[in-house]
Amino acid sequence: MIELLWHLKLMHHHHPVNPIRSSVGNFTRTWLVSSPSLSPYPSALLSCINSKISLSSKVDSFKCFCNKTENTQQVSSPSQGFSALAPDTPWDHASVWSTMAFYIFSLHIPLSFGGLSVVAHVLHQPILDPQTEAISLVGAQFLEFIAAMLLLQSTANPQYKFVNFFKANKLSKERSWLLASAVGFGFLFMLVFLTSFLADRIIGHKDINNPILKEILVSSDISKAACVLVYCIITPLLEETVYRGFLLASISSTMKWQSAVVISSAIFSAAHFSGENFLQLFIIGCVLGCSYCWTGNLSASTLIHSLYNALTLMITFLS
Image 1 (cartoon, rainbow, N blue to C red):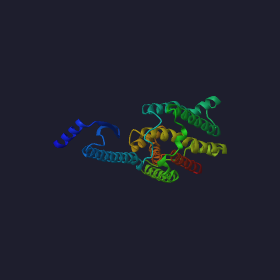
Image 2 (cartoon, rainbow, N blue to C red; image 1 turned 90 degrees about the vertical axis):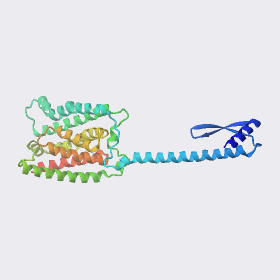
Image 3 (tube, rainbow, N blue to C red; image 1 turned 180 degrees about the vertical axis):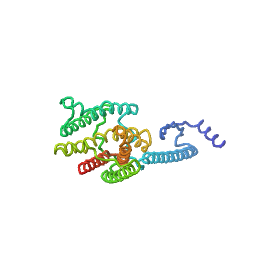
Image 4 (cartoon, rainbow, N blue to C red; image 1 turned 120 degrees about the horizontal axis):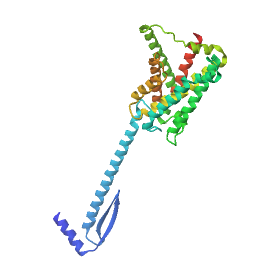
C-alpha cells in the first residue's frame, strides 16, 4: 500500500493530471486521471474504482427495488382485509360529529317527527286523514333527503361529488354488491326472526303490526304508492347516505371498521327514538354496515334496506 501511494505521488509530481467528473446516483465525484501516455498504474486504479462504483450502483439499485417492492406490499396488504372502505374521506374528522348533530336536531327531528304536525296546523285539521298523511310523509322525507344532501355537500371537500357514493373502487369491483345484498338480506331476516322469537319467549308476545301504517296502507291506492315510495326508495337512500356513506365511512378512517359499525349502528337505532325496537334496529344497522364495509358500495346496503322495508310493508298489509 505504501509503495502504491509512493508511485502515485511520483507520477503526480512528474505528469499533469486532468480532473474528470463522474455522476453516480445523486452524488458527483471528481477523479484525477493522468494522460494516456502514463504508466498502467493509474489506469488499473481507475478500473478498480469504476468496478467498485458499478458494484455500488447495482447494490443501490437492488436496495431501491426491494424498498419499492416492500412499499407496494404495504400499500396493497390492507385491501386484502374485510373492509373495502377508503382510508380517507371527503369530510374533516373534526367536523363529522358536529355535522351529524346538526342533521339530527335541525333536519331529522323537525321533519320526520314534526312534519305531520306542521301539515295538520297548516290545513287546520287536528287529525290528518290516511291519504293526506301518506302524501305528507312523502313530502317531508323528500325534503329531508334534499336538505341532508345539501348539508353533506357543503361540509365536504370542494372537489367531492355525491356521485362518488355509488362509485365502486378497484376492490369493490372485485366484490359483487348483488351477492352481498342477497347474503345480507338473508342474514338480516334470520337475525330479526331469531331476536323476535327470543323476545317473545323472554318478554312476551308483542304485536308487530303498526296500526297507523296499516290504516294508511288499506285506505287507498294512492296511500299504498306513497308508502312504497317513502319506505322503499326515499328512506333507504336517505338513511344509507347519512349513516353509512357519511358517518360510518368517516369514523372508520380513524378506528377499526368493527368499532365504526357498532357506533354508527347505535346512532342509527337511537335516531329512530323507539326504545322497544332499539335492539332490532341496532342489528339491522350492523348488517347494513357490514355489507357496506365489505363492498365499499352503498348500492348493497341500500338494496337490503329497501327489501327489508318492503317485506315489513307486505307483512303489515297482509296481516
